[in-house]
Amino acid sequence: MKRISVKSTLQTAFLLLTVSALSACGFHLRGNYLVPQEIASISLTSFDQFSQLTRDVDAQLRLNDIELVPPSASIPNLHLVNEGIGERTLSLYQNSKAAEKELTYTTSYRVTIPDVGSKTFTTNATRNYLDNPRAALAKSVERDLIVDEMRKQTATQIMRQLARLKAEIDSGFTQFDPIEEQPSAANSANQ
Image: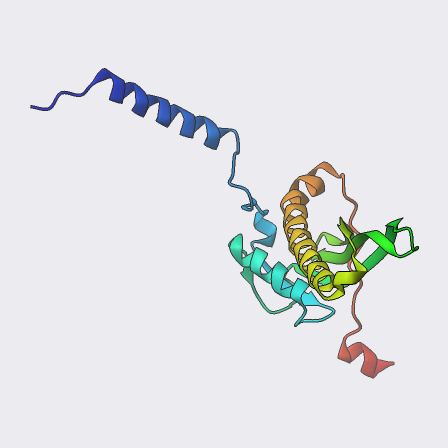
């Protein structure tokens, strides 16, 4: 007959207690967000369906088990409105060439929820990098990598905002604009 040691029993009890406490407090692994049931299925539209940002947001939605469906009036929609990259010089070399630059990646997106309304959000990501005119090719590759990293960070920020949406709607913290009615073909024919 096997003897169960007190030490292994205590370790098992401690492990179960820790797991229970973490699940009870709402702990989730990083990158996994609890998205409200209202947007468990969503349509994704974009200013450019083939842009890297659209692919990154699509990947984040799929990672969080959100079903992507074709656009419809009865389905919530996430529309990527635009993206932009700004650059400014932070410091100069003695010969007046830029030594350090700041990149700012800005994205606007609109969330439309049927029977609630639509809301436009803007998110920014900022990074600094050193510019060396003697290594222009290497610095352009570095800049592209930094922009890709900011794009991925923006996709994650969009997911965080979607996860907060339900609480903000319930608390009245976020005001949604009414959904603009699109004129139907029948109404256009009557005019």
